[in-house]
Length: 452
Image (cartoon, rainbow, N blue to C red; front, side, top):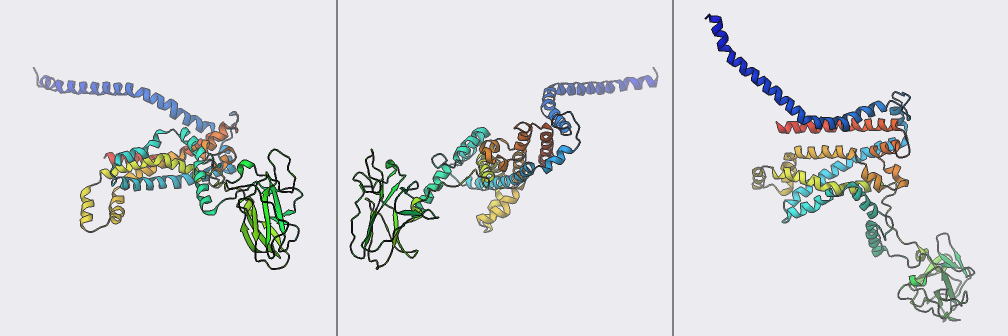
């Protein structure tokens, strides 16, 4: 046996082992690909293909037959509705993630000091279990301008009426033929000059008997003559239930209008004021001789305060952002709370021993140590708000839909909501994808860095 043969015989076992290892690795890759293939198939069908199709479709017109190049992208930035959608999306990106991250941080720090912390976290996280559709319906009702339906306006109206009061007779008006003229401000003024010692009966209509105040009683008949230096009268509902009354006359079944403010004016200036009693009667005493007029100020007939137009053009976007905060605050709090629980307690205790107060610890130690977690939460929320669709579409009423629209809703409206221009809609989708990609890249890099 030669030396060469011996060398080959000694080298063959390691070569065979390497071959087996290569086969094992190849077999492992094939098995891994078999397991990953369904996911790759779904990813390609649901993500890759739609993205590539949308990019290609964005270069064609509405019918999809004529190539227009970058025409859809040019039109996109010329369309006022799309420019408004981009502006609203920028507002969402700037405001919502910052507010949510701040609220989540504050609540996470405060919850640590609450005895029932778990129950409190569960309560704040519960809105995450509500779908955006259901949340949109809830807040659409909560923001309703009618105080009898919208809980927010019901609270606002209650507070307003508690401090500013409200009119008892918003629908009242003078009966035709009465000695009353209506001013530009909605007040009523007697047309005939009155003097001390006179009396006047002021009949109004337009008030349902069931809407009369509880203290209303049968109207007092105006005396034919008042005392010297005194001007008297009655403000009453000139309507007899069941009919049979005499217009302009105080009938026995007619009711006075209590709580009505009445003023005596002279040369356009108010010299005395009073409020009608339960039977609608009033009187002014100590008046000098001269010519007067009786005035019913416009405040008596002011329409009731209806609250805030939450879903009007000016407030619709902040209102929808408020609904979004209600849903996602628990998410931010739980994530930041998890990061807070992992903080080294020795650093916090050392700061307390050195005399730092809680605010200094929060600002100089807690926040810097939580910076990676805060960044992840913020970037995740930025990605999420760029795609917001359900809340905007459901909460914003039809007349202000354009004032609240964002890129996602504008893409749907242009493509399927009446525009029927899938070319322009695809261009909007590509724009939205390009805006989301940088935030996704930041998040992926941070995840990789944390794994190292």
